[in-house]
Image 1 (cartoon, one colour):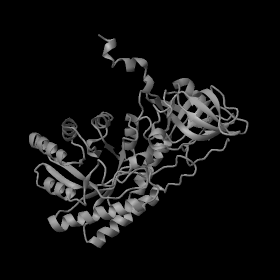
Image 2: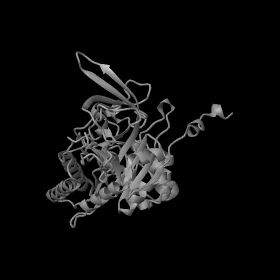
Image 3: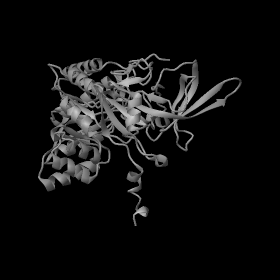
Image 4: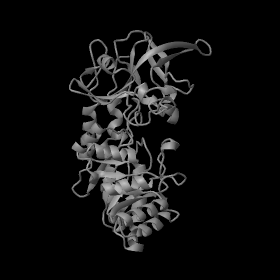
Length: 446
């Protein structure tokens, strides 16, 4: 029960002599006392290591590359600063993410804007800020941008998001390159070509290249390779039919991480080499200029860096068929800080973080405190038989899409986020208060 699986925990995680989990040199109980629970704990060294890993892996002598951190995974001013200090750019998908990136000091020329329904206001803000590129996702967006650049007399770099018919073998809701979905413009139907020709003909819009994203939590390079092949074939078509030279091919993100010990994602270096090889070889085969390769990791940078600390409240044994028993262990958070189990059926691992445990393993279900039967964090989990109210539980790999998708269901306040490094903790995002929630209810302020 005391073994630590390094594959799923942040890189500085250690086990103290009293059985406590230690992150970045800071003890779990100290973090809970100072900041309360639930609490997101970010290993700064882990994040910085993965930023450097991507920077190094995509540094090729024969292929220009750029890496942008996908901020939808988790956005905060400090994380943006770590990303910039590590030499990466930032990809944003809303006006709010764009505003935070600019406020945090991310250079506009390192920012790319995504989104399938960007408002005129969001586009105007991006153009005014002078960001690197806007990824076009629809014909309506072309019209909006045309009006903006005509009014502001600007030249804006754009990429067109392609739908290539490549479906990653992930959950339906996180596969984003098959035809029947909301993102992109279809190559097969001719919509992508029509959009590209339209953009080329608009003064003020400069078509820099094309974008594709096939899904998330991907463990095999084959999907990326097939996506690259189809995108490069389209690029060759644009060269042959319209004499258009493509500067950039953005293959998005989606590299998976280990949530449970059985997960075995590829290394960043291996994935980078696979993408490099297919882009270089296919460009040569098609006799086109090799475009700059861009990627957008999010989960692969912050996912494993973070754990969530909870406090155990209620423990309830349930008798199942025969002699089998399951113990429901309720914590002080739940689906408001981790919706992924309910949304995707995501799997996690967890352990007692506050002490040494004794006793045989107990078949458990880790659940939250919400008034919802689907409020389950881990469906099947072995916990020690001496689990008790007041214990701290740490759930691993909660850095991506947890705080960023958190809600106020049942009027719970969203947890704080702290970073740890070299025995020190720093508050990145403070815990919400009831006053924060009530401030929006105008019935309390008339």
